[in-house]
Image 1 (cartoon, rainbow, N blue to C red):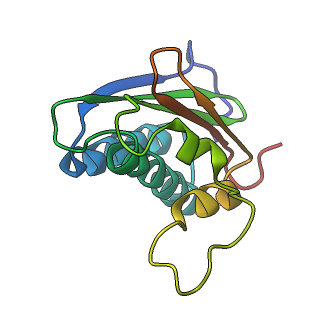
Image 2: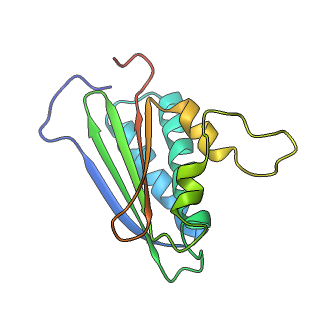
Image 3: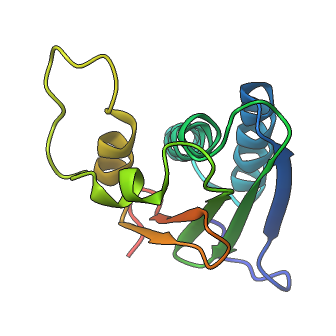
Length: 149
C-alpha cells in the first residue's frame, strides 16, 4: 500500500437494488479504489472476490432478490487495509440463517451451496456478522493486503 498520506482515507458507500446484476459493478469500484491506493494485483483480486461473496450473499439470502429492496455496501480504507460492511433488508432467509452458520467448517462436498461465507472467513483478517436494528443483517470484514501488519 502507498506510504504517502494525501489526506483522508477513501470511503466508498453504495446502495444498490437487490439484483445480482449490481454486484459486479460494486466489485469493480472497490478494485479500482484499492488499485489507486497501491494494492497489488493479487490483493485487489482477493478483496474483489470477498466483496462479491458478501454482497451476493446479501442479495440472494438477505432479501427477496427481486430488485425492490436495497443492500448497502460501505468500504472504509485505512493504513492497514479495508473494512467492508454489507447490510441487507432481512426479508430473505432471515438473520438466524446467517448468524447460525458455522463459517469455520468446510461445507460437505455434496452440498451445492454454503461455501461463500466459509471462503470469506478464510480470506479475511476478521469477520463479524450481526442482526441490524431494522430487521436485516450486517456482515463486516477486514481485508489486509499481503505483508500488512
